[in-house]
Amino acid sequence: MDNVTLVWRKHLFLLLFIVFNPSAFANTPLNAIDAFKTIMIDGSDISGAVSQPIELFSLAAIVDDEMEPIPFQIDEYNIGGAVYFEGWDVPIAGSVGVFDPEDKLLFIYKDAGSRREPRHKYDGAIVHEIVLTNSTGGKRYAYIVKGSRLRSEEQYIRYSIEEALVETDFYSITYNKDNHINWDDFSIVNYEGEENPFDAFKIRLQTGVITTLAKIKLNNEDMIATPKGEHFGPVRSTTQLELVVWFFKVPFMRMSIQLHHSPNSLLYDVRANIPSARRKVLADPSVHLTLEGNALYGTEIRTASGPVEPAITDGMVDEIEKQHMSNGVSIDKNWIWATTKRNLDFAAFFNYSGEQKHEISFFYNDEAGVIDLPERFPGQLPNAGYKIHSLPAEGYFGAAIAVHFSNGYKGLPELFTGQLRRLPDISVNAAGGAK
Image 1 (cartoon, rainbow, N blue to C red):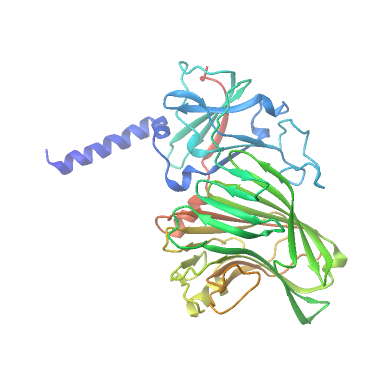
Image 2 (spheres, one colour; image 1 turned 60 degrees about the vertical axis):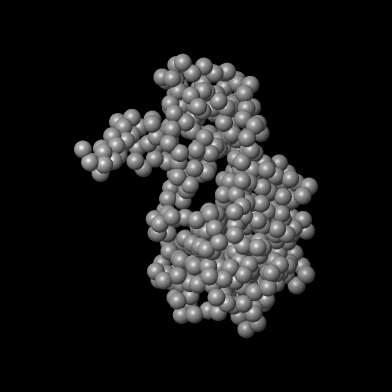
């Protein structure tokens, strides 16, 4: 029997083993995209824990053939569908300290393990078996436990209120204490550049006042974000920010931003109730939400509906970049992917969180000589993100931007951007066979 046949048979045996023994998947390391995904399960799906005190419950999984506690948290939510903060003006959906139907259980995908067997003893009573099934049928398991004294000490997110510092194993961010929109430092682990790869997250409001004849542009210096609360756990941290928009030195509008940090991603969740009288002052307003790079020359950027040929950061805007700007993203097709060629890729996604939606497009600037304050590093190299073309006449308005980081995605962005957003199928079963 030749070597080729032997190799082929080994691969066939492995494939058949996984197909007919799906739990073997639990012992196989997940790929880089899936490993650190945050699994979130609504309290309404966890009948054995809902309406009971949160402190009674924990999470466990099989680790090295032993039942062990794994990192988890239960976040309480408000009636608006965001994380609840005491003292903020949105009431809790339920009761403080109780696992309500709207609350969520969070843990990291890779921490789920193989299925528990009767020989696996554990402290406390197992009330639910969580089954995570991927697209090929591979399964991983985690267990909701009541009354256990055991807790994991692992922290995927480390947070210092005093230093305004968030750290994960992939990135660290120090926020400006006077305005949490701005960064004093943003470092990526294993990034091969000499300085911070990112300059700033930028919010821009461009509008006429009463009439479109006189346009003004408000930037990060006119929008001050102040922390009003922090909720930090081992899996995700959330900061509640109050964003005040200053208009001719008068506080014109207040908005809520919840800033979520996960092991290798950030989420900006922006919400506002726009008063009709204030909105009438704004003529043809547009909003830019962008991420500005620091001298990322050679970076290639693709967009969901733009040309296959990437925009390349070189300090000037060319025809390919203009094509991406014209039709690169829409409400339904909104991913943006960039590879810096320096051991850092990032991908962004946009979503509206309410019924009021307005056209969006790809905002892009690749001009080395342009200073767009505030700047830690000169030049737009590049400045990329989303332009919201209008604001509602009144009422609730919400939008969220998620940014994912990697030391390098593999394959085509048309494929891996879908995988980034796709979670495994989740089922929550009674303890059943896990006795």
